[in-house]
Each structure stands twice: as structure tokens, then as C-alpha cells.
Image 1 (cartoon, one colour):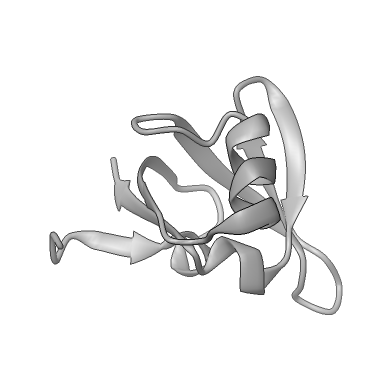
Image 2: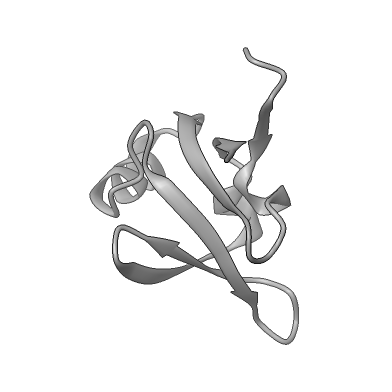
Length: 79
């Protein structure tokens, strides 16, 4: 595994990254793939909810909210 990869939930607000690895499985993995989170997809962290979880991400032209638990299973490389 590349040491430059970080879990998506550690991506600072306003920063962009490329999806590199999905470590989830089952229905959660299927949902992530259906949302377009495939290799080299660009993701931008937009804003946190008032409680800090979930976080809104800009993914393929849509704004998607992901909980920290889900985002931690998506490894990205900052760009």
C-alpha cells in the first residue's frame, strides 16, 4: 500500500484528492461504486455538518454526504 494514501475522512475541507482504493465490502462497497467512487475519481471535501459528521463531498458533479465510518474505508491521494 502506498504511504501517500490517506482515508477520505482525513482530507481537509477545501482540498481535492483522487480515489485510489476502496477497502469496504458488501453493500457499502456497492453503494460507493454506485456513487461513482472508482479509481482516479476526484473528490473534494466541502463542509462538515455542525456536529462534525457527516461531511459533504463533491463527487462527479454531485454533493454527497458520507459518514466518517464510510469515508474511512476510502483511501485517496491528495492532489
